[in-house]
Image 1 (spheres, rainbow, N blue to C red):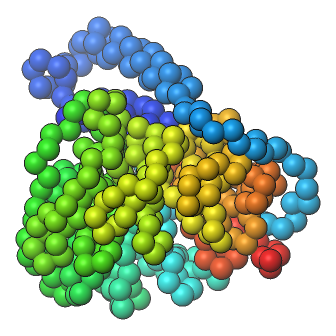
Image 2 (cartoon, rainbow, N blue to C red):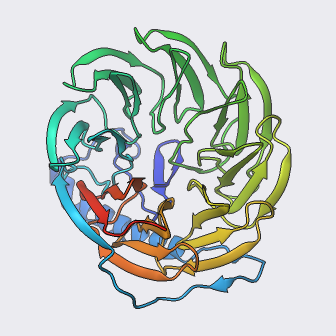
Length: 423
């Protein structure tokens, strides 16, 4: 779920596309008169279509080859009865006027209820056991971030900078706060406060009970060229709030006032894309994070000291499961040794891009931005099964016990169930 943005021009990386509808017509700032429709809009549409196809073709072929030799996984033909689709819930689709065929929001689950929002601005509570909507709330902006649940409240950000506190049982609004900038990351709840990161590289702290903005702090570095339309979730580690930013830095903030304790430049600013938009994965005294210039870092979460760097990764979150590290980038799934970054196996799915990985027992699942969701043997990397998902997905799948949940770009909420108990 990646989008490249430069001022008024935006284009995602997973897969790429261009959106020119954010800006008025060049020159006057107004739309052309209807009498000039054929002279202006038809040639413009043709030109935009040609550029769209060109960018997609170019970006889809770019990928990083690991330097280390690794076992290349295969496409195995095995019994596919281990997983089946449980239900599909249709959510509100994008307007036909909206030329953004994507959904970025990742679902979150508590008990028998799943919570997720869509780009059209609707937020849902869905019964997992019945596959039915419980309640719906309409926000002022599109919802591209995962919600955060604490106690009886679900906190929902939108792309107009609003943060909503909703009663998780009935969907009633408790309060609404507004920040400067779009929000694509899940808020962090800590010590009765809410930490929120915007695409403007701003970290804000809100009173979780009232929604009052206590303070805001913004990164002063300027983005060079394009940035990726994604945002890392803030993480609390060892008395610090750690956040990755679009300028390629990983920053430790004081949770009391937002003061910067330390910062480390991870992304190479000379590269076209160098964002740190993946959420930090912390495992004891080691943290793992990827950068958009195709690198994976293992570092000390207390001071940013780098232990090792591996040549793969982009903006997807890493996953650690049973002493194995899993990373996805450019349509490839990697299995690595967490202490060294050495590749154990890799599986090229031959698609432009895929989501962050999710694991259940010996099975690993990812979803492509177009087409299918894939189920792999996490020990060998072999493809065990694939399932068509309408529109693909820019969202990440989540696993809760033996259930997989994912939101497709066509606004379909899918639930898959594993039939076997994991070893």
